[in-house]
Image (cartoon, rainbow, N blue to C red):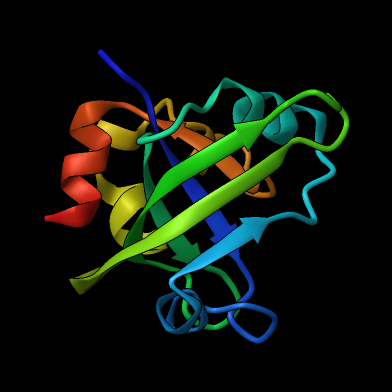
Length: 127
């Protein structure tokens, strides 16, 4: 079973709409050691959920990993490609209310910017 990931972004800095406009981008600005480890574990075609923080606090879209260069472990280079918008964005409140996410770092480690997702969690977010 392949792991999917959720990437958090501050929409005032770079929103899902920006990613859709750009089609592809290098995902950077990550400094947390656990988030960097998660990035190094990604492979091309890894499925992603884009989650906007700030006032929105919702899973809003999908993306796919195009390439990962982990030759510098402290600063892996991750290129992602926009997918589709999630028709009904899933709020943090909905995530916290779901038993499916009870043990997830998304709930337990609120500041973690790159969060692994099980297949079931991914499906629940992109419904």
